[in-house]
Structures are given as C-alpha cells and as structure tokens.
Image 1 (spheres, rainbow, N blue to C red):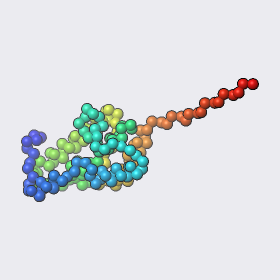
Image 2 (image 1 turned 90 degrees about the horizontal axis):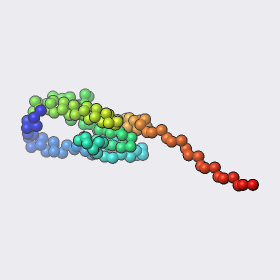
Image 3 (image 1 turned 60 degrees about the vertical axis):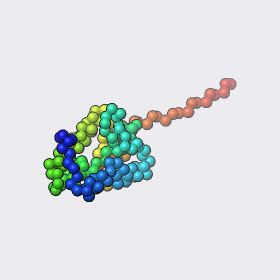
Image 4 (image 1 turned 30 degrees about the vertical axis):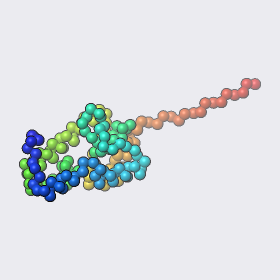
Length: 159
C-alpha cells in the first residue's frame, strides 16, 4: 500500500489517543519482563537481534539466540481479539493489519534462517504462561554443560 494514502485521524480525540499508543514498555511487556527477571533470566530490551535486520525485538536473549516479540492484539491481528468492524477509514485498517502480519511472518522466517528462535506473545496472554514458554525455549537451547573439572591429582611424595 502506498504510504501517502495513510489517513488522517478522524478527530482530535482519536489523534490524541493514537499518539499515546506505546511502541515499547507496554503493560504486557513490563509484566513479562518483571516475571522473567524474578526468575533470574536476563535479557536485552528493545534491540535488533541481527544488526543488519531492521526489526526490533521486545526482548533479546543473545547467547541463546532467542528473540521475543510481545504483539498487541489490535496491531498484529490477534485471531481472538484483533478482529473488529472498523467505523472509520475502513479501507485502511484491514490492509494495515495484514501488512503487519506479513512483516511479522517475514521477521520470524529471517531470524529462524539465521539460527534464532522467535517467540511471539500476544498481549492478552498470561505473563506466567509466556514466561514458562520462554524459559522452556531457553533451557532447550542452552548448550550442554561441560563435564565438571576434576582437580589435578597432587604429586605423591617421592620415597
């Protein structure tokens, strides 16, 4: 779609509401981050998993190569909550949401091809369930622990 066709807000109130929409640090993101942190998991926030890819993940576990995206139901077309009848700009929103979904799928494909695991979390998911999925993915991708080192045997005194 031609971006020049992007509609103007239908009213000042709508414009204000849209300007307040957060692209990061949403309530769902913050709740998930707090829970993961309390479980001892450390991550980077709002980073590109791959420098050459212009996509920003909400959480990046770089050593394990796991990227987490917390997707908003409206913007990413959640099958449970994202479908709705649009009252204004009806020509625009279905196309916009579909473009977002295609970009999400492309991002997942590109990262997977580069050896990353992508986890997508809907904003309506329970943070505990999402944290469990992330923890399981991280555990599965951890390299096997090296065998414990045995201390060197002390030399025996010569007799």
